[in-house]
Image (cartoon, rainbow, N blue to C red; front, top):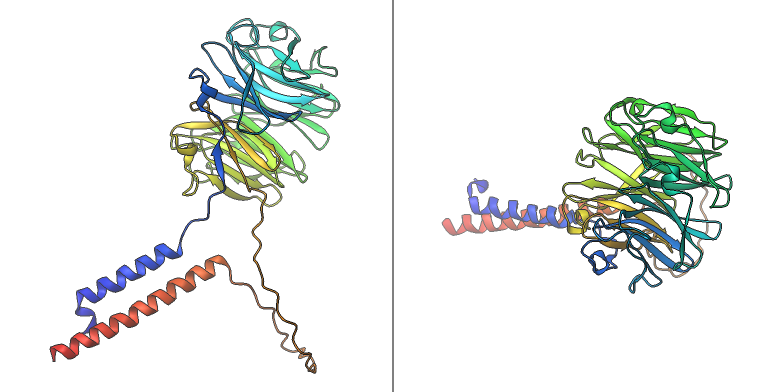
Length: 432
């Protein structure tokens, strides 16, 4: 029989494998590049922890536990200028955790290993002044973690072992406590996510023992519980990222057991899961930051194989992996790291990592692929025939990329199969 020839079978199998390999090429990578030297040239700048665009510059805050936090800025993503050094006033201010623009000023929330965290602001990018007391009067407020703007007030949330706090100000200098610490529970020791959506300000807590909680307020001071217990999974220890666009809000979590979850909601009360297992990888333990760009929400993870970046269409839950597949390597080529900060400007996504103080941008995320269709010469008009209403003609559908791949596979396989038959037939004749 023909198929007894092992060489024939090998040729056909190898050809089919090659066809499959060729036909399943991965998508093209989005253009990306590291835009700073590691740590901005300072080995002690181990993380880029905060990003914001202000008055013609992209600002980047660092984590530096040796000589104190720094802030750098650039107008061209290439040349960087240091505008803050030495932790602003003391080296115990070891991290710039958050940056936000409010009422003409750029504000920086910090982390302090002693005396309490501070908030600083500038209106020119180079001269900074402290606003509010150290730790807002409490040394246990050691992290001004996240900020948002709601109803003409600037809000900062804290990490505090006695119960996380939310502080607000209408002018940036006079501050008031906007919640009961920990919302009445000292176990809510951090508020990692705070965000404005659809007439409410939302706050997500860190509660590793009882599961994360989500609270909201329409006044900014009177709060109601949206859910507790990690919304059904107490392994969701924290609500980390909150972002919104097109009438939907996205909520991300920190889960060291099952992989982090992501939800979306249109009303702030009823949630639909986007993923319940870290987008299929339980090593995606944490999605600490989110931002929006081009009608999508972007969030980055912590992963031992290198941080991943995903986009989410909150209107339908459709997701796309941007970093961590076979186009852009996980962690941009570094293992066991996470995306510590994320921001957008001019249709570009800026990503700060916790590894080696690296800062990247990714481009073309807003470019939609449009198939070039050549213009056809106008055809000579022909007499029209009466329409057949019984069997209407369906419009021709364009061939999708996947269908084209299958067509390639089949063509190569058929050619190889015919060649194998011909070779087998020739060998049979020669043996005779």
